[in-house]
Image (cartoon, rainbow, N blue to C red; front, side, top):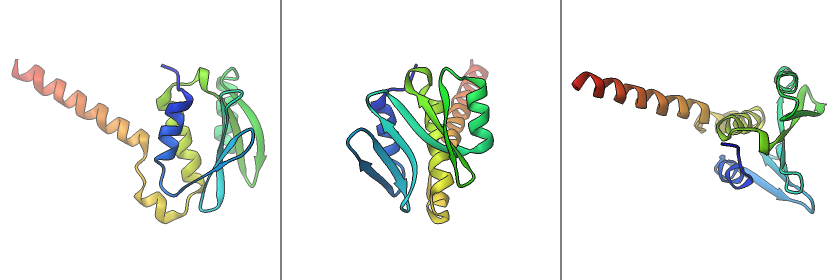
Length: 135
């Protein structure tokens, strides 16, 4: 299922120390006074800070979903079309953008959504295995 703007905001709003900066045509997101993302409602797109290698890989792999926005300070910013991305992948990219920007003390206390999903999936597999053994 593709990600919606409501789901995007629900996830990003839960990030520690989020600084939401509404503007006329977009909303910017920062942590520690440094930006890590943008949302443009007119185009239903998100701009996210990534490593240069991740930016290049995303754009090369799926140019219909990702496009290069710009490069700055050793990072590559990527535009994400919400209509083409699953929520779990979007949350991983948002968390990575936040993690690349946040102060170290915040990173240590934050929950990585990818790790949480792997833990949930592992628990589900373990329950299934235990249930099949008891039958």
